[in-house]
Length: 299
Image (cartoon, rainbow, N blue to C red):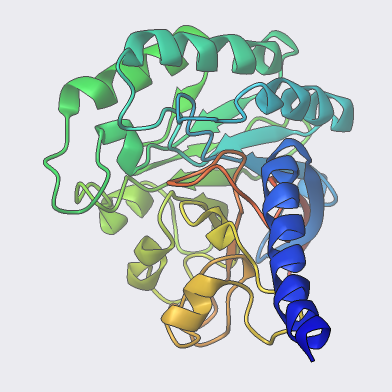
């Protein structure tokens, strides 16, 4: 009986040790998710082109995996995207030397623009030095992030839309960037004000919560970050992560969200991010590069 009781105790402990050990290793892996971006009125010349999304580096967090970003950038270059979008949270909010950490971010990302790949960015809550909604946003920190990204030719899309370059296309494809949610910078009407209703567009933001306020049909394909996929996804359950369990199925954590999220004719994909938040562990939830292949919506 004593042996049986010990076995009952040892088995879950062994499982926990294995999961924790793997949880320290998995942040240094990388997953490429290939997804289809269905866009109404997509110009023919943009059919099958690629946009890659990454974000949530959190450089400077204790036991962070920031060296992983160099491998991520190499993989992106090898895939020859037509544009790269960065989803915010470049440096962890609690670092002692934000200037130095942003210089690391610069060095990691600079090869993208040196290769001639157009790169666009939005800011997240950590870029305003916000660890929670209750913390006052730091405009000084946000301005440093903007300046450092602009210095390596990354264009900041703060509640605005730009036409992506394609010399062969008569009609444009727009990229729309929405401001950070927690510091109340997500001005949705302003982000779309210079494009027409029928214009093709791909929408990017940091926080999935901003997606709810996008008007019907204005974001047939949108991508967000912020969640890190919950970092720990529970195997063998119908829920993607512990966050989804806590939120009773209402969390927007990973992959394409359910149809009831957001307004009609809008679709949101949530990227799991590269870095870590709070604890330096990932389980069943590797860092993610998302590659979107553009395709025209059927009429």
